[in-house]
Image (cartoon, rainbow, N blue to C red):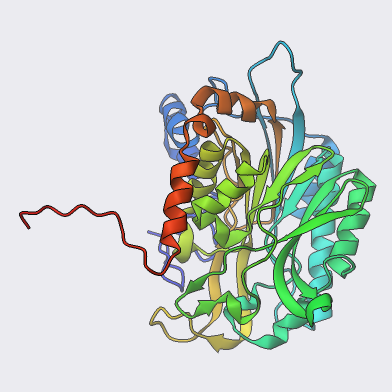
Length: 405
């Protein structure tokens, strides 16, 4: 049996792996006979066009960069059925998960620069591989210090339009002709320097297309991100880019089905879920929620989770009855893509930086809408009526009581 993590997660070893394996999938490959594994994978991951989601080869420059940089690199292809009146609409999309290279005790400028340098390497590899749209993890440019409730970490907040992380992404977007989703801690100088958890969408020409602010703020125990920022005010925007229509459902919003639905109603073809979540808190939910959203809303989902364990100078509590500690737990990576036909890729490693690449045929979105008819059979009028009643202070649940009770 593997040694339990300090936060109580017995599934992982001290390095963040699963008993020495990168993922559950790698463990299954090692122990399940090949003739049985195909059945396991069909149930766990679904099939795309009647077969497993296929791995695709990548240019040697990208694979060599991953080997030299020591990060996980995987690539897959989702296909749609051939159509007579529309050609395939294939877009190559990437997800980046990364740890913080510098300790949290280092000067803030050094911490940020170390992250920038590491992510630049990975994005350059994505460019070599032909990625056209790329998304990074939540607040990728800093440690996930929100668990500490200390205000000094607000120094990492920056302008969405002109901050150093946005400038870096603009440079790389121009260099590679790539749309980049840049989730940062935003400093809103137009409104008194307030802070938001924001995803900045940068076009393939290096222009800022727009931004979306996190809709749902977790309040779990005394982990309360509203110490730093409140619920966003941008709705459910869908950004029409050169390569497709994308939305960004930031982290905790994945627990709210209607939040996913909002991006679908606005026409998203790909929705990213940049996140930062740890093993004990959410790992059994992680493989399910993005996949459910892809199915229910007939779009692709790219789920990105931070990786590594970040240790902070001062101890803090998490409202779980345990003694004060200096880390929030292990961010378990495991980033993956899910498709509207219920198929998904294997995940990236649980304990390594990584780049996940997938070729997505966007025609699959409409094909699944036509097949299942979810939009046609939904009762939006009924839902709207119930919600309108529910938000009133005098709401009474529709409960019919057995008169014999």
